[in-house]
Image (cartoon, rainbow, N blue to C red):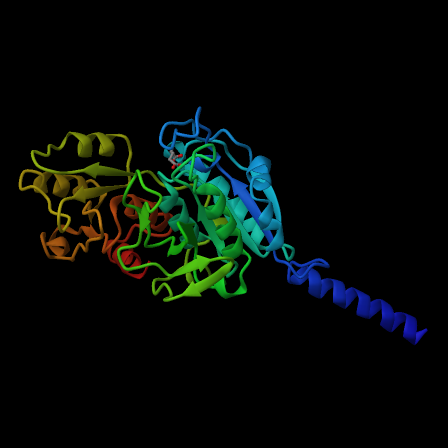
Length: 356
Ligand code: DGL
């Protein structure tokens, strides 16, 4: 009797171990691909169409079938979450995606997540998930600059590399990633710097690593708070408050700022030149809007990375404004939207901008 019972216990424990490491019988990690659209799912009329094509056409099962080599590195299954260009993603799409990722990473038979995505807002989605999904499991956003129908298409290798990273134990606990062009960039730092080359994405402070022929090579870790060390949790967020971005260069007027305020924005990201500079004529308008309860967040639209120093260009303490630190305007919008679900206090919001 004892032997039978012990044998049953041993079988249960062995299966549980295999399941817990996402490798039912094959020793390979289980990776789920969530497809949202974009160029990586795009199709052009001719192999010479590397920049003229229709995005968000190819379904997730065809994307997976286009890279059979993925099966050598992971057990892969796919879900079609959306099928749209990423420029059209809205806050409620981010919430849907975030909640699906959060549910999947809680499953013992899931070791990592890949999200196929348009390049236009890859940096926003990757940063959002970095802030709100409480997991150490790798979450990789992957895109492509050319459709799969073009010569030298980059999507298949990007997707293969993304699955390698998502299934890698050494990628755990490092925050979310954007994997493209053999580089592993942090979802927090990376942004689309060039819109016509496969080497489109860069992090001002450098990539985290490289992925080459199925192996990850790490050079640094993200210092900012993320995932399991974040105070934000997608499972406790119902909706994201409205935060708008006003782009400012020379000859700037207050029209957009006032329109955003009238539309109910809880904060405006001032996407200023240089150090988040604010035109003299605009300062009193922003002070007036702050007085009405709107938060003003100074960011810089300097392309390859810029700091906005508190009380540098403007007396932020005196005006009760916030600075976006090194976050570009689109990332500042993501962080402000998430932070405003937790607090409206300026000092707390500024702490959050310095820590995330
Ligand atoms: N419509 C753009 C998007 O989905 C295509 C750009 C791309 O994916 O490379 O972001």
